[in-house]
Amino acid sequence: MSAPAAGTPQRLCPHCATLGYTHEDRCPFCGRRYRRHTLAAIAAMLAVTALAVLAGIGAVAVVAGAALEDRLRDEAERVEREVDRDVRRLERDIRAELDRRLPVTGP
Image 1 (cartoon, one colour):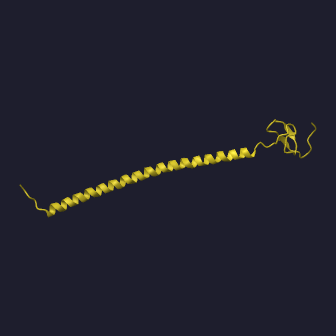
Image 2 (image 1 turned 135 degrees about the horizontal axis):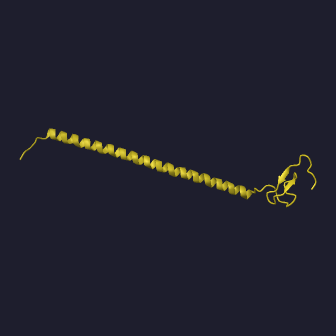
Image 3 (image 1 turned 90 degrees about the vertical axis):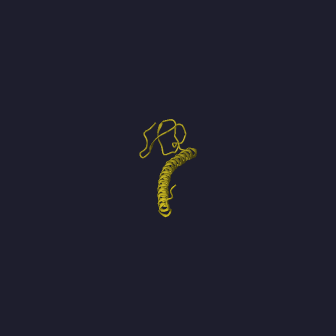
């Protein structure tokens, strides 16, 4: 092969691994395109990326849901303790009021 002309790009074929000096979009040795990416490969990469993003969003949703469930359970327990405390206080107040109003009867 003769020396390449000035300004001719050096290209390596991804299929036959031959080094060529050409402006063409095909390898002068094997005749295949220099680019490997086809529409199907790009579509597959986009599908994999979309699945990875959706899986990430799903994982975040699961973690956020678990955190929300824990927080709601803690809040429900706190409210239940407050209601129990208020009910006990009301029972005490009612007993005290009844003891004050009702006379003590003995046997």
